[in-house]
Length: 201
DNA sequence: CACCGGATTGGCT
DNA sequence: GCCAATCCGGTGT
Image (cartoon, rainbow, N blue to C red):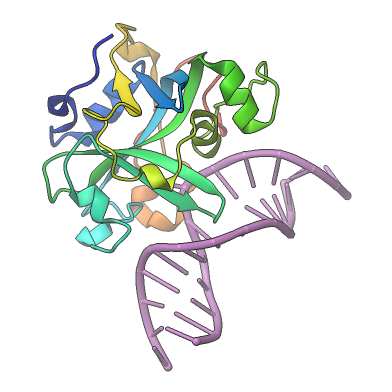
C-alpha cells in the first residue's frame, strides 16, 4: 500500500487534510514490532487564528517549532504529564497547521498493542482515544519531528478504504473550552458508526 | 526560580 | 459523574 507523499500534507487546507485522513492507515514499526490502525477520528488545528492551537498567534516556542516546519512530519507532545499526543504537521513551512489523530481502529499487531497497553487485545478501548492510541502504537515524544514520508518507523498509508462524505461526522473539538469562539468550530471529524472513535460520542 | 494548568485517562463513588 | 495522576512548557518574578 502506498505511503502518503509530502504533496498530500502540503496543501494549505488543513480541514480538508483532516477530513481526508479518515480511512487512511497509521503504521509504526519499532524493533520489528509492527502495528497498524485505520484512522477514524481527527481534529484540525490552524494557527495563527485558532485559539485552541499551541501556535495561536504564530507563537514560536521550543515546543511549537515542529509545527512551523515541513509538512508530513510528526508533532508529538506530552499532555497532562502522562499522555503522548500524535499530530501530523501540514501546510507550507512557517505555517503552523496540524491534524491531531484522536482514534484509530486496530488492524494488525493487536497482540503488541495489548502488551503495550497492559490490557486484553479484545478490549474496545485498545486505541479509541488520542492518549491511548499512541501508547498502543509505541509513539512517544522522542518521535517528535519524524518525517512520515521517508522514515521507516512511522508513516501513513492509503489503503484504498473509501469514505463517503455522508459517513463523516463534523463536531466541535474535544477539551478546548479555553479557546473561546474557536471552541465551537466543527473541526473534529469522525467516521460514522465506527466503535473505535473516542468519547464523547 | 516558582507557579499554573493542560488537544486525557481510568478508577472510584 | 468526579477527580487524581504526573510533568513539563510557558510565563512572570
